Length: 85
Length: 219
Image (cartoon, rainbow over the protein chains, first blue to last red):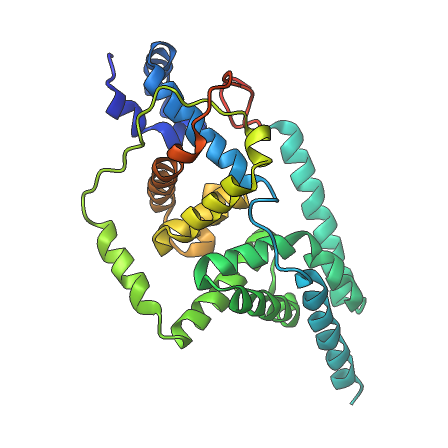
């Protein structure tokens, strides 16, 4: 089946997740092979996901981990005091 | 998932099950080790819902304390990570409700039913090598802002799926929606981000078609 660009865009996300229905996959790949626009859309979306998954993009607040474990230490401490009563 | 990935996952679950058994048996200090791999997930999930650093941190702490207090109730029929993410989602939603900001969420839900065009920005001259792009602080900040500006329901799904790389089933379970909704929201979120970021990404370098964390068909 001959797909148009819009049809391919509707499946970009599934394509990135490798969950395109089997009967469509070959048609999409064939379209991507000759369509520069769609391959650029695919590349740009994919690279946004690479950026997103990079730990430097979404950083945790400074001292977050220390404060989290401090709170937990207090909880564990108070739990054992309860148990000793 | 690859066979190796599944094996590693199974080994991790076995280790966690052992840790949990020991904690419940009295070695409570081990709880620190149990949650350590999920610190980032806890914060980012909470942030995707409350959209505020202080509140997100408080939710993460409350979730950890809650998980500890209820550990005996964890049955092991789901993954510990899924159980934990469900707890932090609930903490964050409760906090939102307290702040009476739930109204925004219902507005988003209402919007979702409308037929809309979720198409990407068509372009031909876009090429970018991710490792180079990552060195650009400005680009990272633009992406942070774009994600923050997504409608709530799209940002939450995007955060779990693409920031934390959770699978569709776990994301659906954590957010209490079905898998199809996860897929639809994720597609829309990605297309919105693509559209928003394209102007910042244009560069004339050679394309790199290496795999994206093993998810790509050509990797």
